[in-house]
Image (cartoon, rainbow, N blue to C red; front, side, top):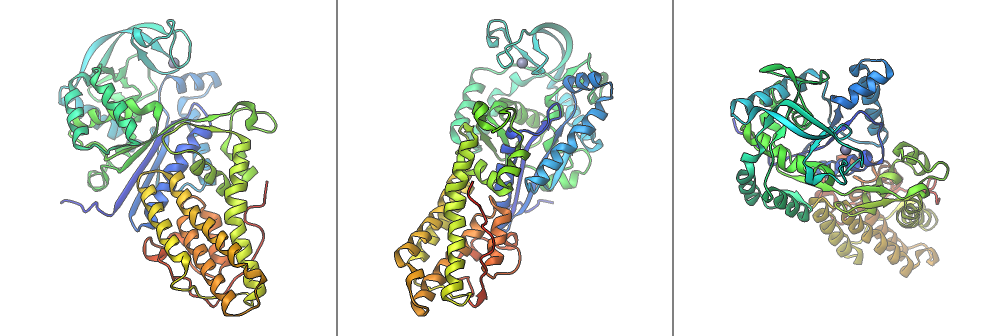
Length: 504
Ligand SMILES: [Zn+2]
């Protein structure tokens, strides 16, 4: 039975390799995916957000050996660190898949078998250069002075019997598919990169290892285990029930977006759709490709200047402060450079001085001039048009997976409302109709802002909502219904409270 997918929105983050603890790069992609998912929930869509951990492979085996424990024990120590980090960052993932789960194993084996039955996986001998750290083969032209281009370390010559996926057969099929789906990759310049890569000609890639035991055995030859791509990429379908719950799978696949970093674009936008085509599965609807969030050397930390742990930044600047920085600072798709100064500056300018200041001054004036009771907005307020433009621009930018532009559009309403207050100076007026009109409009603008900014600032927007006397949860509101001008009921108690964003 065909399923109605028009009201669904489904997104994935990469699954993170458990050879490292959660760091800023992991947090970056995950926060962006979460904010986009939260936006789509506000649109009233049936949203599913998937994340998880990648737990097989040589590096995990080696790390476990070094600690004298089993690879599964090693993975069991690290995977919860990711789950805990995402809880602390208010990531609203609906599922967390670990590649050591049974549902993943059966799905990977089903996918491998489907590609094998299609004739696209064949036994061959691999000869070439291999980087252990990458777990990847390189052709001679890719090496830099004989070293791995990523790790700048010597690669090793390897000759072994592998099963290969015949990626070389998929050039035209991939080009045809992308021609029919020209907006599948965001931002669009990444699409050009993918098409260019396909046109240079595609090489078959190895899908198995005989030398490794920490992995999923091939269903037709258990002397081999699945190697990296068929194991890791498959999480996107196994989590949705491929191989374990086919009815659920058909109702949830294809997903709307794989959120990925630019370094894994080839595997996600070339290998993965080809693997799916071979198995008779539709490729995902889209990919949202982010740049790298670089770390500006030791300037980052006041103390050690080492690896950026996102949880330390939460202690410094709050969950919402950190989320906002990640979303607002760098246009998604470009590289960003993380610095501690940049974090503080962004926090002070946008949160403390703009949103925090607006909330505080509205509450102060309402308390002094309106008896602490919020007045109704004016239907023909000059802010009404600005609000509706901000809603439209915010909506368009989230649809393009551009959180920085979306937040800038939302902040245009905050800036306009602060200017409106400065022009009218209600704090100098006597209590009465004139001050009520200005403050009713400011409250209404603030109400709309709390809804629009909720995907970035889930905690503080809820706090503002309560302080301006409104009940219920912001996440239960709906766009566009609840962001139309005139929704603030008036007559509710407004409280000031502690500063939402104390200056740093
Ligand atoms: Zn390498």
